[in-house]
Length: 349
Figure 1 (tube, rainbow, N blue to C red):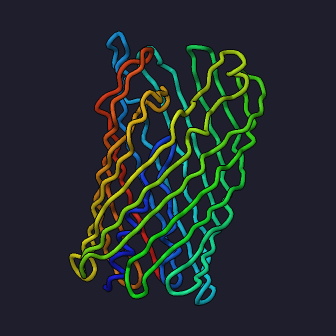
Figure 2: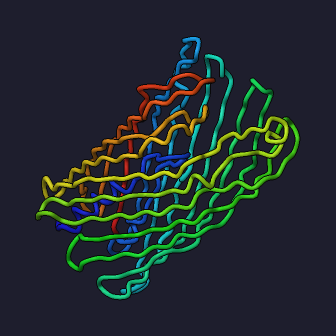
């Protein structure tokens, strides 16, 4: 197992993004574009949030965020020595909230998406390459707010955006730096609110990610990155809800920044262990009852094992500690966390 195999395992683990700010879900990333030859992967994620709150009368809400399943994958082919193509699929935005106790009892919200990216990578020379392509994204959501007699359900709507990036690599070394941009996508949603039909535009945010990796010894690779997402340009405001109540389901005041730093260590010729940490600063007072968290810090550990024949298996677990947040209406949300269990199977063929 050479250095390139070591870093392939590290990148595959660290680029599986656990949910960041807003409604971000684990993403497939662009690492598959840099795999040699033909390559395929599939990842199953089990997301277990534990978000609890206490209202102003001391009543405990219990856990308001049910567990979620998330599946993403990629398949990549080399067309020539310079050109590669890949199909990437993930669920970039997810959220599920269900209050079963306390004053907001009955408040529910569900936000789901699926994205398909047809990406190409062109290598100008051994050091520099560009990549990108169209993105087709589907989106649907629903919410119940019995306190005001409100319900909303949308159909599943699709819209197009794009992804584009630059990469720098050092030949015969796992050193690589990538800069990836994903565009804002605008969906024309059809919905029913209060039992009436409505139409409105729903955006998902643009983002910019910088990721880097470099060896510090024969067996150790350092990796890290930063991701910016423009959530301040996003709000979920169905028109009839706004007309009758002056409210939004969700409005973001600030953008999000998430930084990650980690290392991979080759234990044996077939086994690599990776550890990482990431942080997203607090952004209070950006409170929402359907997403009652404020900033977070993650710690993760993963293993990559080469089964032979081009097949690798990569289990990992990430623990996220959320920042505390309070609201004069909904009360206090403290000591909350999320656990993400991931299992990736990949095949170089």
